[in-house]
Length: 578
Ligand code: NOJ
Image (cartoon, rainbow, N blue to C red; front, top):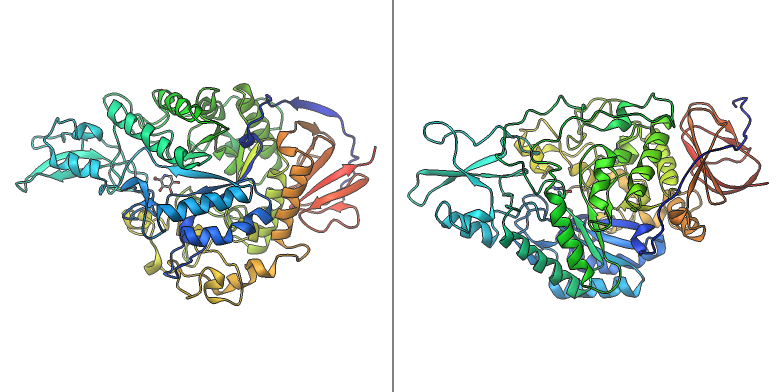
């Protein structure tokens, strides 16, 4: 044990501006429909499967669910390539299935958020097919980002931008007579052409799409690529900084003494991310949501740096929440975590918005693996059979439990990703032939991509596909050892990860931690994150040495703390005696 005493001096205090909307404090559970529950047994999850499993989420204690896209789509990017925003893909069911899901969720007291994908459509969308068929310079072409190529015959792409999934960000079209035509921009796969958001027609279509879903009763939208929809005028060439240089201050400054303000130099935004013009769109969308009664949420997926810039997405007349990716990617080091928490609360609080914490989603290595990696793994690269620095699963799970226990004690909103409540790790051994992520194909296997966090989740250890369905089919193979993570082996079992999540969610609600304020506590050393939220004391020991606990009642512990010591990689919530 350390020799440090445990005085609880007030070091700093942060206040979130008051507001009563449900989403300010909500815990929102991300459902990835293809991998949650499969009612028809074809190996791909569906809406009817989700509806049947919703009671388990009410039992878990979350406030809302976010559904990743289930719209009509050729599924080139797992549904993030939408061919019809106002219909359900037959793979997932029908609009009636959606209505049943929504009604059942509302009956259970769960809000429902759907995933809007406005930056790009599928190349199979009617708008794009019409644009391809229309002449250059036509209004149909102006819905997308068509440009002439460079070079004498237009053989070169209009600029040097590289797709997020690898390869060029431009694809050349072929004219009706078979000769090469203009190029079109696609930030992601070539099957995902970018829309032209400078075009008022595009804006009008999406206002109507929002109303279509709001009329059905959805409680809001998660907005895909909310930072990419406006491009810098002239589409200038761009050379990104070396990998890692733009990951935000949180990682880079992990050795900085906490609570000292650190001025971050962040590299200029690429000409396709974070352009000022996106904010006009959010003001328009905000106004559409305001046409409806009740609190509806807009949550931005905005990969921009630094946090002060992310906060611009959630000014009072724009969106409600923005995922805190700086927090997600902070190293498992106490000084860095303290600093990113302080900066987040300050940045979002300055515009009256809640901080929106998140540790896992369908695009990143699951945090039960990520937190124990011993080598950097850039976002999207994934971990596969040949990766170096693979995590120790025991350390990974232990850290994940501690990290979630810390996150759920923070004021603001928090997102969970399906399966993390079971302690699921990344599947790092997927065979190459099973892979589906376009990243894998566009980088010729150089990057594994995101399939490892998307494997269907286990419900019952003895059932086919671990209860994902009744046939045993699974669009990505499930590792045999996932039987030991199945929900039926954890429910009601003291100490299981599922019971830890349930207890944390119950206590978070009972103590209104989501609506609380943080008071930092000194005296536990630089490897412990220590604060009070209301009268709950939270201590997370990220160091190697156990720390003495104060006297009081233990409310929640991510590991065994009997004996009065807080071991390494452990978080505890306490009611400390006066
Ligand atoms: C972000 C989504 O989360 C990701 O899964 C998708 O591939 C890209 N946007 C493109 O839509």
